[in-house]
Length: 328
Ligand code: NAD
Image (cartoon, rainbow, N blue to C red; front, side, top):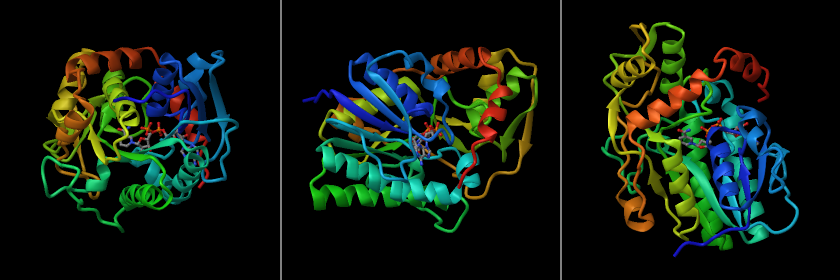
């Protein structure tokens, strides 16, 4: 049975995923408070909701004490740098938002008696030794490698969420999100899909890491949002994987983007980042069983919609805007 909500808090609500969640919650007539410090997000992502009286964008750092007036029945905790380029520039902030920020968001849910959903990540599986990855797999993470700041922050956040559930009786859930793509990704966030699209649209070479045979499973953002809200309404504690199990080699992603954009760009093979996972694919049996969830948007359709969105923005202007915001 699915619960419906009336007032939700979305931390990181001006980010890529947060903005899509806010939009969908408003579509479902849920009043939304988006808390964001605009570190890697942008008010422009929710500009279409600016005049909506049921939407409130509040500039707030969730590593500080957070308060929202009145009742709240859902807290979606999505605030965190998420792309390697961001968390490698902001290692300490990433650890702080995963620890103190999660503690504050859980405290808010506890005070309000709200359902709480933690945005965790497939990165908790590290460079996985089990493939595809079921929720029962404990992962293969290097805590002192460069990606450790993100992976361990999320692993700690999961442990804290579980502790609030067992100790304080907070109604929590954990979603392990696999690579997601779609409109409003930042062209310079360093992730493969926006990087390749930006390079293809500018006629530059597409920089493929390693030989490109490493795989990624990419989920279109509307499918992810549907899965997260199904989990929120389900009462299930998780962790639950949400992601598209269809696995693609990175070099194939690059070739498909060249074809979709009609670009004359070629490929350039560059060094693989340290601890870059070789394979990544969710086992989504649990999401299917407990949420009845399965992805609906295929790669070709999702890519077409994403490229269309990128054609409508100035991919270079966004760099200048986001380069300003670098507190640690
Ligand atoms: P994003 O960078 O677009 O969004 C993160 C948002 O959090 C930004 O708006 C940023 O300004 C905000 N933020 C950061 N620190 C904050 C703080 N201290 N206080 C308030 N706001 C803060 O990233 P995204 O891709 O939308 O990711 C959102 C969440 O989903 C993150 O928690 C991320 O770890 C998780 N996730 C994303 C993916 C993906 O494929 N996009 C995959 C796995 C997990």
